Length: 156
Image (cartoon, rainbow, N blue to C red; front, top):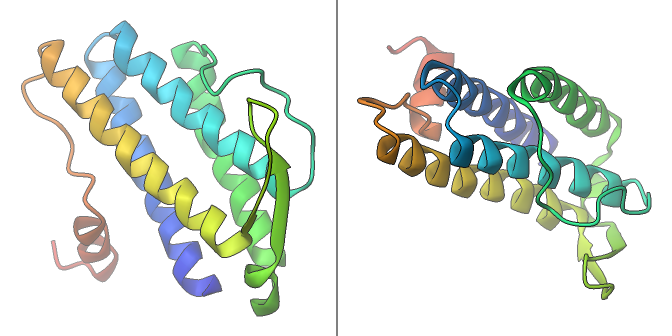
């Protein structure tokens, strides 16, 4: 589980880097930047929840500048990788209790939360790609997981 999730979080970093460059190359259109900021905020919200920390955000929609996003991508990835490296196999079944933005008290297994973080990133990057196309981008980077795996194997 740990090896698989580490690979997924490295993929997440790879795809975030590519989309961030695409946003920069498109002269930072507002909607893609807002979505990217949401992606980064959500990653941090879930990281904090996994550590039992109180919400530092009042909403999953927080505005970052492009410069802040450039800084937050590697910073957030480093936090997640350090966290994953500390986990044991048994930790993935641990129940994480947290409070959502409506104030509801919820709980989920850590493995499910980590899977959600990756899935949310993929979903949001697809929205960003759509908004970049609407803003006039002629092409988008390839962010498919299978493409990433082929790069790792040097099949491309």
